[in-house]
Image (tube, rainbow, N blue to C red; front, top):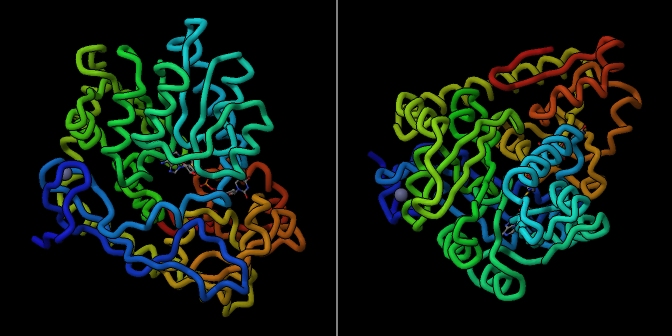
Length: 409
Ligand code: SAH
Ligand code: TMP
Ligand code: ZN
């Protein structure tokens, strides 16, 4: 067993190294061409805790390198995600935020994709996010946002300046936070006695089942599963009470956490925990097999791209996702095989993908002229993008996907 010197960030237990993607850049570090020598690299390796089963990174990227005023990701670029968060907000308003003075706090609110619904419904709310530019958009759309990192100190300040929160909600953010002990101490200060903490994240079970290796990158410090989150909540004085699987982002999961004894464990929660027992999510062999599948995908993808290139076919990337950093850097895909990637996010245009240095162009470049093939990095938005880009296929264009295996569609 290869035990790492680094200890588990949740329980201090021993970490068994299970995956290594080598030298990788900051995934949202889209760079200007003149700054290619300023990139930060780290070893992207995962370990599984032999005590609490939490899967986590062995080497950490400092938070200020990832999340800062100019963090480029914008949640609202996807119509499907806008609908998802509108629905989620509407459900919380109906069920948990009925009291006239109910208070809703969101950790990692980004451009206000969720908070605008809260604001429109007149719900008292506050978002916390260090991405100042994204927060400007949220504020312009009527949301209250504090530009800060959520942690124990900011939670105490929010509690003092406002009131205890009935719901603290967070999507695709808590797994990005290595200092999770501080989050839970903050939760203890901020959450009302009967309040709930709801978090939505990529699900480790789906990552393993789909060989979705590109879900592993700097920001996804933890890969959550039912059991590891249950243990984590208990360790920090809380209780996991509900679990819901979600189809978004290629397989997500929503956890509801409360203070102990406040809510009954739901049947869905118990069922998922039981189902997980047979998935081997804490077993080293699971990741050795995963690793073999990743190598196969990588070889097939590069072979396909090289063949298309040799045959004179044009290939363009679609969606400069953070995940594409792992794919391009691990597989060794650069501008020679994929000359550019189109993306709707204006803050990414004119920049290069981190490490692999593929130029990013506006979505309009896709049809000017259409390529023969499009490599879909934003595979989690496949339905939305393929519907939007129907003409591409109508004119004979083909999509290349690499999840759960390399195929042309
Ligand atoms: N919730 C949105 C955004 C996810 S991106 C969605 O699901 O689409 C992750 C966001 O978390 C970024 O906007 C980033 O700035 C923010 N973030 C990172 N660390 C944080 C922290 N400690 N406290 C609050 N927000 C944080
Ligand atoms: P995500 O998978 O992390 O949400 O990132 C998706 C990326 O793809 C983001 O940079 C926005 C981009 N995108 C498009 O360019 N066009 C689209 O239609 C959608 C849905 C996303
Ligand atoms: Zn542990």
